[in-house]
Image (tube, rainbow, N blue to C red):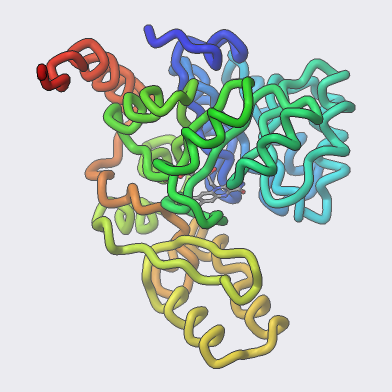
Length: 316
Ligand SMILES: Cc1cc2nc3c(=O)[nH]c(=O)nc-3n(C[C@H](O)[C@H](O)[C@H](O)COP(=O)(O)O)c2cc1C
């Protein structure tokens, strides 16, 4: 068992969170992850509150373990989604893409553990002061919306800035990443890309296959011109998006081009015109297995590495 301040806070056996990924992270994946002793998280994405309530109901039928909901705060339904999560007394809320400060107090009053995603020490400091229970420090290696600092550099700096537990995200897909994150001072990890290629994830088989086929150079980042960079696998969609940005196409046209692309990839399996959001860790994903297998392998490998760590110390 890898006991950390995070496993104590969340009352779960393993210090692993499954990223709350829009479209991808539905109750099926979250249930498998929570039942395997990690924290499963429903990705609310831009879905309306009624969808999120239904997801929570289904998840509760499939597990009695703690779980979370991720709400990107740019979601125009964010207020309603958060109200549903408060009513439903979920265990944990993770937030991304926006300012979570106004929501922290009402969520905590409802007994919900609040864990925002940060990509800078300045935001980490502010959110600790505002009452966040833990933070996810997400590096630019991640799939989906990203910051500009790598995980290796960001995590220890966030750890040095705050005293609440820090969860490392971005570029982690196995026990080596978990052991490294713990060595950096993190209390656990969040993995996204690795969990897409699992049996329980509802993403289209062609999406999963694209991740398995990818190598470390298969991703690219688009959306810098909009101020919202996104990492995805290189395909006609991401190349077309980049081309529009390079030509200085208007923001409205660029946004219109991107609309509906993640859904097309996840639901329809359109690996050409859809947005295959994935991180650089895709090159480490070589198989499609159960979420439980991912978790067991990750924990066992990290434990073995940490147990033998002294062998890496070079005597003077
Ligand atoms: C397809 C996809 C969708 C994502 N959607 C969200 C989201 O809606 N909200 C969020 O906070 N993070 C989102 N993320 C980020 C993940 O939750 C996680 O932090 C990230 O994938 C970790 O990096 P990794 O992919 O290298 O494991 C998404 C990632 C992917 C791959």
